[in-house]
Length: 427
Ligand SMILES: Cc1cc2nc3c(=O)[nH]c(=O)nc-3n(C[C@H](O)[C@H](O)[C@H](O)COP(=O)(O)OP(=O)(O)OC[C@H]3O[C@@H](n4cnc5c(N)ncnc54)[C@H](O)[C@@H]3O)c2cc1C
Image 1 (cartoon, rainbow, N blue to C red):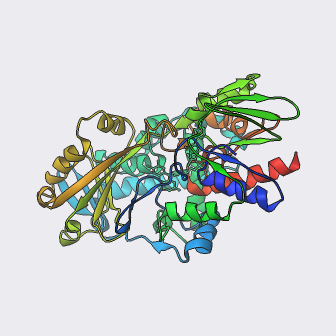
Image 2 (cartoon, rainbow, N blue to C red; image 1 turned 30 degrees about the vertical axis):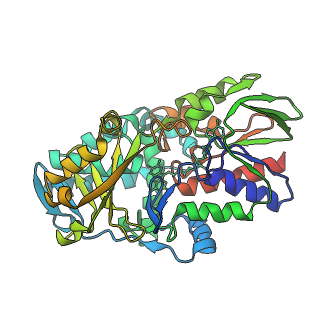
Image 3 (tube, rainbow, N blue to C red; image 1 turned 135 degrees about the vertical axis):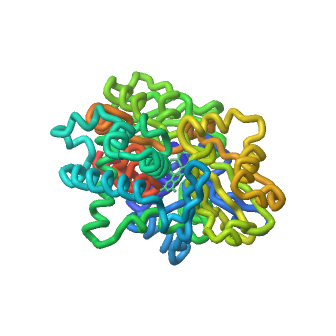
């Protein structure tokens, strides 16, 4: 197993349960990959990577229930929206914005109802695959406010600017919303839960159940493969195995040397897979001033900060900014993004400056072992490449969120673990 993120650890456990002997190699000095609960002396403080769970994600719910008990329900209201300097509560939004939201949702639902899973089976809808989500939203919004609102919400879901997201791939993700509608559950079921003791704690529990060794500080560099086995070359050692599962994110896979080279469809799929550009900036304050302002911390704003929510996991009041796309790249290039963010906040909430204690930026775009936040279907990818990302190459198997139907999500990482386990056992 290469990668000790949630997909790697879960696959290792599932394979061990079937009698396989597994060793896990991890480039970092910790498990968890893109899941990281930052803690201090007082315990868990905030999630620096993946954080939210939807109501209809059974694999991750089952895992959290097994190791941590009931899921923690999110406080989502009252929330705010700020557009052109005007602040509104989200239960009192502008009518033109709401009309645009309804139009886009009705359109997306009717289109998604025609689609099937996996995403690449929708060959009838090739015209959607070449369109971007930005074009679709522009076509169906009448007002600037509506366009901003839809863009802000969907950019947050996708983790990148909508001009990078293929319409067909996005619509196949929208099938989940249609399913929720069928079950009489709605939008409020999204980002509805968190892991009560944090994701790092969950990952530690998985590791504790593992019999095999986890080897840290072992970045894989080269993979040699034959019909009978696979040899992995790390900086300081080389080891051979009957089969290998690679859970590295796409940009990291792209950096590996394969001997002989992977076939062309596989190489093209790895290169074409979109990796979203999302970062978090996290601030600690002496008190949760947003509550005094009458909102729960959740906010969409048409400034560089884009989106905020309360990230508190322990006793210290934490506000998290989640910034995606070109804007995220701009933030990572600033000399002092933490204080620049506080300055942005004080434009609307002057008390933030006085109550600010400390902060940190989590730049997943330049992190050498993620090289992006999570994957998305780029225009043309769904029909052109998605299927080839999943396929094994001889005794090399591929898992991770980028190989799943729940692409991008923690649920997808777990879905891939179940799929690849069956695949390895079958061969
Ligand atoms: C900012 C942010 C916010 C997110 N928000 C959410 C959310 O709210 N809800 C949600 O469901 N998902 C969210 N996600 C996505 C979620 O975190 C991921 O989908 C999931 O954690 C991916 O797990 P994985 O096992 O597929 O990959 P990873 O966790 O990336 O595991 C892959 C492992 O491979 C290792 N590796 C890389 N290169 C090498 C190498 N050469 N050799 C050896 N090891 C290597 C990495 O260090 C890593 O440990 C978010 C992600 C980010 C970054």
